[in-house]
Image 1 (cartoon, rainbow, N blue to C red):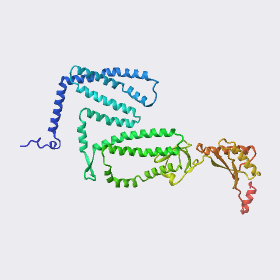
Image 2: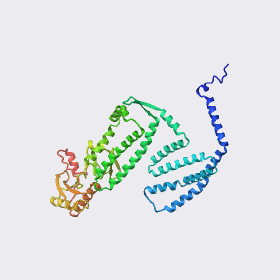
Image 3: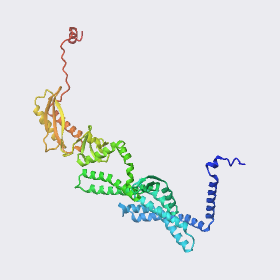
Image 4: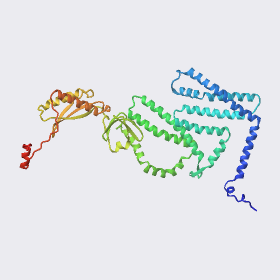
Length: 456
C-alpha cells in the first residue's frame, strides 16, 4: 500500500533523496578534512600568512616608492614599476607562503594546501600585473576575469573536466570535402574569443605605434597618414580574427554556408555603413579632403579635425564638432576652401548713396581700407567693382584675398567692412538709407484739400 509520500509529485520532479545523499557526502568530506591535523595546520598557516603580509607589504611599497621617486617617470618601465608597487602586499603574502612551505617541507609535513594557495596567488599576481600594464580598462578587466577563473580551475584540477563539458556542447556545421563532420563547440567559441581578444589588443597596440611613427614623419602628407591609419584599422582586426580561427583549428571553408545570410545583411542592414566606409577610402585616395582643410558644408564653415571610417569630423568656429557621413561628400559635394591653394578670394559687398558723385574715389577708398586689414594678402591687389544701381544705393563689390581660411571667413569680412565704414566717414562718403518714392496719380478733391490744410 502506497503512502501519500510515495505519490508526491515533488519526488518525481526533484530527486530529493539523491540530493540528500550528495549533501551528506559533501558534509562528511568537509568534516573529515577539517579534523585532519595536517589540513588544519596548513589552513591555519595560510590564514596566519596574511598578518605579516599586511604589516610588511605597505612598508615595502613605501621603500620602493622612495627609492624610485623621480628616476623613472614614463614608459613601459614605469608601468611595470607601478604594477609592482600596487602589488606589494600580495607579493609579501606570496613570500610568507613560500617561507611556510619551506618550513613544512623541512619537518616533512604535507604541503598540498599551501602549494595550492601559492599557485593561486602566483596566478593572481601574474594576471593582475598584466592587467595593470595594459592601459585599456576594458581589456584589463576582461583579461583578469577570464584568466583568473581558468588558473583557479587548473590549480584544483578541474580544468580538464570543464573543458570536456564545453566540448560536448557542440553544434554541427556540416562536412568537409573529405566527408568529416565539422562541429562548433562552446569551448571553440570561448577559445576563439580569448584568442581574438588578445590578438585584437596586440593589433590595436601595433596600430597605435605605427600611427605614432607616421605622425612624426613630416614627409608623409596628412591625407596619406589618414589613409594608412584607416587601412590598418580595417585590416588588422580582420587579420586578428583569421589568426584566432586558425589557432582554434576552425575550418574556414565551412564559413561558406553563412555567405548568403551575410550578403543579405550587408545589402540591407549595412548598406549605409558600407557606403560610408567605401566613401571614406575614396576621399582619402583622391585627396579631395584631408585633415586641416577648411570646408563649407551646407552653409556651415569649419575645418577638418579627423577622418574616421564612417564620418568626417569638422570643427566650427563656434567650437561645435560636426560628424558628417563620408557619403555626403561624394553625393552632395562641399566647398573646400583650401584643397589646392590656401589663398582664396572673398567678397565684401557695400553700397553708397546716389548723392555721391565721385565713384572712382569710392573704389580707391575701399581698396585702401582693405589693405589695412592684417589678414588680407598684400601680394594680391584688392579689386572694387561697381555691380549695379540698386533701389536705394549704388552697389559695389570689394574683392580681396586671404591665405588662412581655416581661421574663419566672416571675421575677416567684418574687419574689412569696418575699415570701409571708418574710411567713408572720414572722407565724407554717405551710406544710403532705404528710400521709397510714392507717386499719387489720382485722389478725390476733398482728400487733397485735407492734406493741404490739416486744421480743417
